[in-house]
Amino acid sequence: APRGGDGEQKRDEVKDEAPAPPPPPPPAPRSSSPLVRDEDRGLIPSHLHLSLSQFVPVPFDPSEDRVGCYKSRPGGFPGFACRWCRGPAGAGRYFPASEAGLAQTTTSQTLMNHVRNCCMVPQEIRQKINEGRTARGSSGGQQQPGADNANPDGKGADQAPAGTGKPRHGGRKVFFHRLWCRIQGVPVD
Image (cartoon, rainbow, N blue to C red):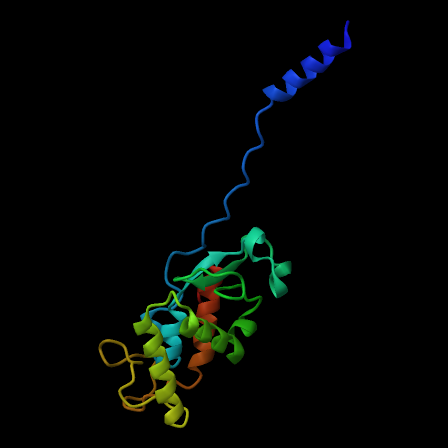
């Protein structure tokens, strides 16, 4: 048998093989419910509540997010992203490794700064955050009376005594525990 015949047969066999299937899409977010809810008002300052409500749950995508400290995260690891820009990891997409890391003041500041500086976030939201930070800073670390941290009915189990305008003592810890559970898709205990 001539050699050319075998080569043609092998080429035909290769042609008959189906192309490799595309890689599967990244898993869907674990929860479509909001990460920050109205029931969280009064636990943290209103400008931080507004800032964090601009984020939505997202899974870690190794093809896009494997940078810096996120290199060791497995695909599908739960995190969150700016709902407006869905920017790259570390600049719009965040994947904290622990509840303690999420609750750090530096993390809160990074997230708030992203929202304040993201050109995709509507100007009125950025302005409210800046006003809230200014009001809080000029009152010696307290929100101005009448600041938006009450539930619609003016009460709220998670709120400090009426008229104080301050978040509930220990509220930050409670809030970040809730947020961590929501990001991870586990029940809040």
